[in-house]
Length: 85
Image 1 (cartoon, one colour):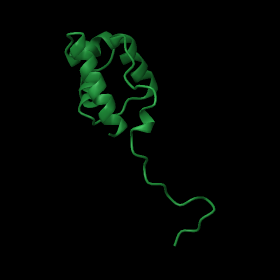
Image 2 (spheres, rainbow, N blue to C red; image 1 turned 120 degrees about the horizontal axis):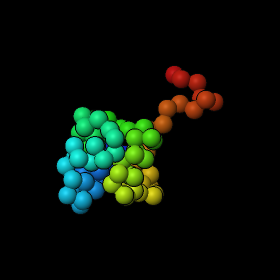
Image 3 (cartoon, one colour; image 1 turned 180 degrees about the vertical axis):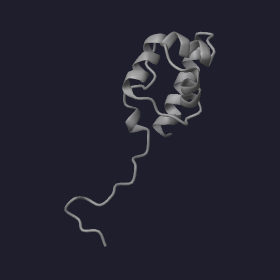
Image 4 (cartoon, rainbow, N blue to C red; image 1 turned 90 degrees about the vertical axis):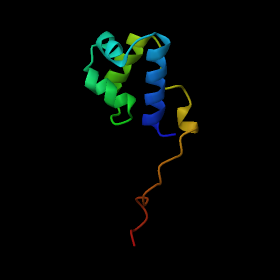
């Protein structure tokens, strides 16, 4: 599961658990409701400051520890020591 999808699900679940609409969660975090909607739809990945504001507003961690272990790695490009063909 890509990080943006994991974040989208976590944000949606956290808002629902607190009986908040996405708009209410965005107001609580001091964010633009359109941006929060795009995050929930997986269209936008927030910067660290936005993620922190959402976590504080919802009183939860949105990206769990060790998530990188469950998300497939991106294919690696050529290494610096390798010449492209």
